[in-house]
Image 1: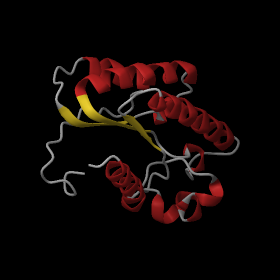
Image 2: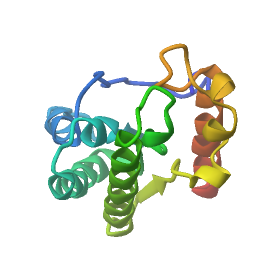
Image 3: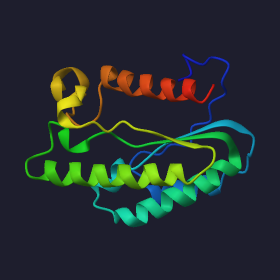
Length: 167
């Protein structure tokens, strides 16, 4: 993002392994209220750690409330179709994809309920998912996280969302 938007000052408050409720706690601690963009990528751990997704959805709504107090444009995204990752064994794949789809619905609904929030949809059905079509290319060596090419797909979707919002 920094290379594509060199005039943008980036404040990264990300922490690996957290769930939506933890990001809510973190954003409440941010005192600045003049960000142009707040980009929130969360939810994958809610899926894989079997968090209560209704609670995650409620936390997302509150998270967007807080983010809109701090930024002009808020973007929310979560990992794509997590169950397609090659390392995930069957039948866990089914549970993860069902949970990914449910979290997607909750996050989309949360964004739609907010005036300045946009949900960036990374979820794809298997037949449309480039990660599933070429896992060697789009997954990292751990067979769970995206590779550089996989992140490039997600980044292009983020850039498109920025353009659609006039940024």
